Image (cartoon, rainbow, N blue to C red):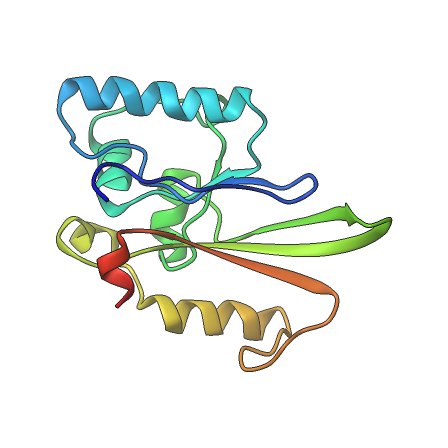
Length: 160
């Protein structure tokens, strides 16, 4: 499969996009990216992850007010860099599922690579384990009471 792949995940009140909104960083793609971010906000998305190229584009080329975009998450980006972007490490949200309140913890990972050198990204697995430990959620077994959603802004090849 070629082209940009995004995954929107609706879970009874949790609307997320894993990223990969654009493929190139030319001017037309920049305009598309701005419209995508603006649209996700207007459509009520809770959060979105981005690819390294999109983070770089957001930093170097675009001037989008954080109130005009959805909450952006990068769980493996250091706090200093996240602050520069106005991004969060994770998103916590309680939702109703089958009449029961369920706590969700959403993480978004950006794959280290060519465009990620200026982002100082941590290895994804290390970052996830650190966040889960801080939330008292075991990384090696099923946790009751919290739905953990991990999104990846990257390609299928990067998962292997």
